[in-house]
Image 1: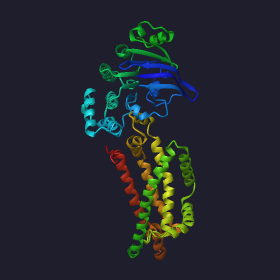
Image 2: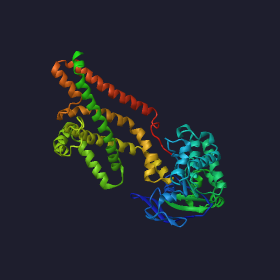
Image 3: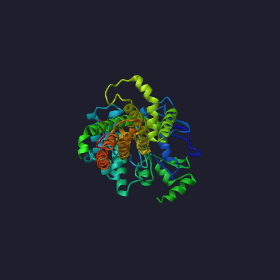
Amino acid sequence: MIKIINLSKYFGKTRILNNINLEVEQGEIITLIGTSGCGKSTLLKCIDGLEKPSSGKIYIDNIDITSKNTNLNQIRTRLGIVFQQFNLFPHMTVKQNITLAPIKVKEMSKNEAEFVAMELLEKVGLLDKINKYPDELSGGQAQRVAIARSLAMKPDIMLFDEPTSALDPQMTMEVLDTLKNLAQDGMTMIVVTHEMKFAKEVANRIILMSHGEIIEQNNPTEFFDNPQKQITKDFLESVNL
Amino acid sequence: MNDIIANSDLLFKGLRITLMLGILSGVTSLVLGTLLGLARYSNITPLKICAATFIEITRSIPLVLYIVFIYLTCSPILGQINIFHDEIFGSLEFQSAFIALSLFTSAYIAEIVRSGLKSVETTQIQAAKALGLNIFQRLKYVILPCAISRMMPALVSQFISLIKDTSLASIIGLIEFTRSGEIIYERTYNETQILALVALVYFVICYGMSQFSKKLEQRPFGIIKLGF
C-alpha cells in the first residue's frame, strides 16, 4: 500500500532521514518509535507530501507522490494525518472543522457531510460538542475531534504524529482508546508514539528509528523480548519497560 | 458661533469632500493593499520583488511630497481623460489626492496584510493541506479568516490615519474639511472656535472608528461568513 524506496531528507546540510526503505501492507498497524529528533515525524510528513524528500521515492498504491505530475491534493484525500498539537481550525465549530474538507474537496452535500460528522463524533464520544469551538474543548477532546476530522475524508491510511504527547495521562487514555477502536476496524495505521504499552498491545510491527535511519523492525513480541541491535536494547532500557 | 453658522455651507462641503476622499481611497487601498500583501507573501519571485519595491519606495517618501508629485505628474493626463463632470469628483485636485492617498495607504495595508498572513501558524496550513484543500480553499477558509481577525486593530488604525491624512490634500488646493476651516477663520479671525470645532468633528469620526474596531476584536470571527 505504501512503498518507500531510498528516501533521504536534508534540512539545509542537516540530514534528517537517511536512505529509508519501508513497505506497509493494507491493514497493518505500525508504530514508529525512537528518541526525539530521530526523524519519525519528518518521515510521516514525507508520506503525506507535507515535506518534500531530498531524494528517493514514495509510492502510495503505486502512485509516485514525489513526482511533479502527481496531484498531491487528490492523494491526500486517501491519507489522514493527526498532529501532536491537534491543529483544529480555531474559527470553526467542531462541525465545521469536520465538514469543511468533505464538502469542499470531496464535494459531498452539506447534509451528507453533517451526517458523517455526527456519526464520527458519536464514535469518538463527542456528539454533544458538535457546536463548540476548539478553545472550549479539553486537549483529549480536541485530539479526538481532529481524528474525526481526518476520518471524515474516509481515508485508507491514517498517520498519527505523536497524537498523545501534548496530553495528560487521563486524556492519553481517551485518545489511545479511539486509536484501538480504529485498529479493530482494520484501518491501516502508522503511529509515531512514545507510548510503549500501546505499541506492544496494538501494533503488528514496531519500527525503531535513530539518527534518520531504521534500526530494527519486528513484531511486538520479538521486538521487546528479543531485540537484535544494541541501539534497540539501549532504547528499551531507557524507556524502562 | 455666528461665524460657524454663517459659514456652515462651506464646512459641510469640506466635510463631504474629506469623507468621500477617505472612504473612496480607503476602499481602493484595501483592495490594492490586499493584492500587494498577497503578492509579497506569495512564492512567485517577480511578484514579490515588484510588490516589495513599490512598498519600500512608497513608505520612504513623505505623504505631502507624494501628493504634490502625483498632482503634478498626473493632472495633465487626468485632464485629458476628464470622465467625471461632477463638481467634486471632476476636480483634478480631488482625483490626484484620491490616487496619491490610495497608493500611499495601500503600501501600509500591504504590510499589515502580509504580517497577518505570516501570523497564521504553519501547523494550521499543514492541517489544511493534509485535508486536501487547494491553495485557494486554504486561503479562503483557513488562512484569511485567521489572519483578518488579527489584522483588524492595525487596519482600523491605518484607516484612522487615512481620514486625518486627507487634510494634506489642501496643499494642492483641495478645499477639504481642514482647509475649509482655515478659509473661515482667515475671513473671520475666529481661529480658536473654528479649529476646535474642526478638531472635534475629526475626533468623533476617528473615535467612532476605533470603537467599531473594539467591537470587531471582541468577536473576531463574527464578521467572517464562512459560507459553507
